[in-house]
Length: 247
Image (cartoon, rainbow, N blue to C red; front, side, top):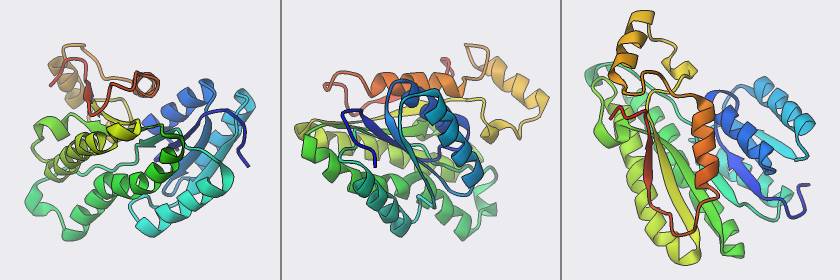
């Protein structure tokens, strides 16, 4: 059981990429962790072992679909059993889909909304009562610049992330009187597996569009996340773009 005065964070989609970097940053900062993934249980188990060996923290893992309300209830049952507190919830789990809207199936649309948007509702509605006990907490949603601007051939992804941004701002207003802050990071082009389908030519062309001249790193997202989760309580309802000046 996770006990004591250390802060506790739950990070979804933590087995690789941004989620893994988030887990490493929060472990280094002394947070006990609840980490989730959908399928990569072996990677998550190895991450748990690595973090517990490297830092004086405790880590619990959960494999399941965060886009499924029943499985999210199982996750929070574990959190309630294992910890008396939840200081930070980071909704990072997400999927992408690239192509014409007319080529997208109904199931692919539904999967996009469940994973990228519905999941934030499922986790937040269960995290808030835990945070209310201490009259404190941080909810951070990992979004995208396409939720701010929209992208051709990524209509569903843009719609889901746009919904997540609106969810962030509305929930922030709702929870501000309870000293719970809700913010989002709108990521630009980050060097993760999600972008590894780009050819060398496509990547170079994209880098040329970005004033910073490069992709961002998962570690930069994690550093900003950690900063936002230790920021003053007056900072809430913000969609912070991390995109190298791109959008």
